[in-house]
Image (cartoon, rainbow, N blue to C red; front, side, top):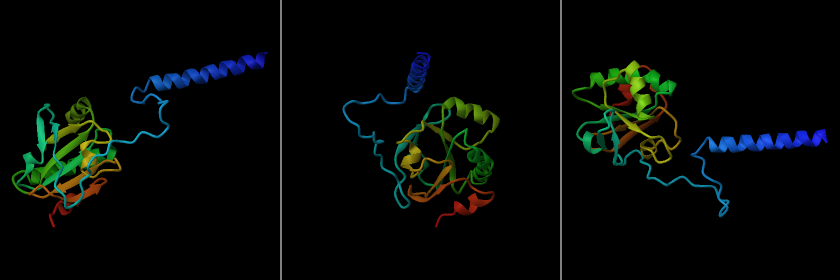
Length: 187
């Protein structure tokens, strides 16, 4: 009898832990009785080299909308996708900031696209200030990073766009010291 009681307690505990884990993650979809097929992420157009920069609008640090590509046509644009929790992103930011400062009046513009929460971005930039524009996006399967070609969802990710709004380069991973200047040269 004692052994059966321990089994019952163990099963009840496992069921309770499973239910608690499921309830603590509201993003987890409810199981469906209608279909056993796995859910598919939404299909979004993914830009490639040679294609126009996709149109999207994201809020800046003040919550004001920034329209891509309209706001940046006329000069090359380097979009750097990052997050406050991404170590390699944080390491390359000073180099990006120096590059942006060197090209403030001509050459490529730099925009940081943070896949993060507004509060985390504000807190981070309070400690590590940068002086190029930052826009904020909620990470997800159809976020701006994916539309810019980052189908693997890894950070950092950079895109170089020419003055006419066409993507000319895409880079997954951080820039090494001194690499940005050469990489940002248009073909």
